[in-house]
Each structure stands twice: as C-alpha cells, then as structure tokens.
Amino acid sequence: MSSHEAWWIALSPQLRDRIDELLCARRLIQAIALLRQEGGLHPVPGLHEAQDMLMERRAELDRQGLVEPEVPPPTTGQLIELAANIAAPVVAVEALWDGDTQGWYVDLVVIVSRSSRHHDRFDEVPLTRLRYGSDIRLFNGQVPPWPEAQQATEQGQAVARHLGVPFHFTSPAVPDVDLPRWWDSQPTR
Image (cartoon, rainbow, N blue to C red):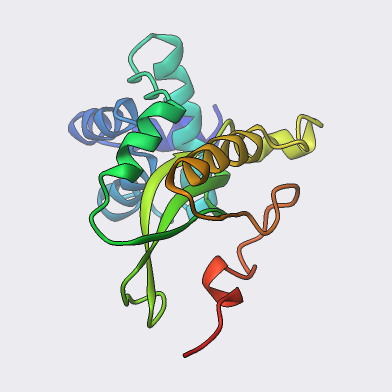
C-alpha cells in the first residue's frame, strides 16, 4: 500500500466525502488545505505530498465521471462583448503569464485608466484565464509552443482591434512572471 493510500484510508469517511466534494468541483487548493488542517495525519503531509495525493484522487474521480467538466474558455465574440461593457476608459489589452501549483496559465486583461493597487494611473479588468494542461507538458515535450499563449495573442489582438487600443504580451513564447507590464512603457506624468 502506498503512503497516499494509507493517508486516504486514515481519514474519516466524513472528511473523505468533503474532500471528494471539493475535488469534484475542481477546488484542489481548498481540498489540500482541508486535508492538511483537518486530516489528523501524523506527520502532516507536506504541500507537494498533499497535492500529489489529491491529484491522484481527482484523477480517480474523473475516471468515474464525477468531476465537473471544465468550463470552455469564452469565444472572441464573448470577450469583445465583455470588454465593450467596461465602464472605465480602456487604454490597452494585455496578456500576461502567471502560475500556481498546477502550472502556467495566461491571463487576458483589459487595462483601464484609473488608479489601483497595481499602478497609480492604471488598473486591470480580467477577461479570461487560459490554461491547457499542467506543467507536465514541459517534460513530455508538448510545449512550446504554448497553446494558451497563442490563443491569448489571437483573442487579445482581436479585442484590442475592436476597441482601438494596443495589445501587449511581453513574452508569448516563454512563461515568466517578472516581466514588464504595458503600463511600465507609459510615460510618467
């Protein structure tokens, strides 16, 4: 019996049900927190151990057809409609990399003219988040190219054209979070 199986069996049936509910709703981070906080396991599984264990469990639930299907990303037309309904003055459309315990993804945002926690003159309004798999793709040679970057570029350019503003994506070919944003290229007042 693997350590993951032993941990799973050691959990109360009620806690296993709560974790399964979160996993079926694609709420992995919350399931990890619940396992580590209320599992009563000694020693408490590390973050990566808990993630591996619950990803295996989610895969099992998925094979049984119990995991909610992923919501398809919005169409370009839907993104244009979302962006067109933003009340603040739109100044750019931007794609930027981010990541979490699952891997890299691309956020597509509209930059608007108003101060925010991000910048003294600009803010971002999210349009969509694009991800087409986990970082295992790096090891099995599926990326690059990154399909989420290609889609973000195509859709972002279409939205920007429709709004008559520039499109910005610092590094579509290489994921990185420490890259200049569109507003970094704007003159200071």
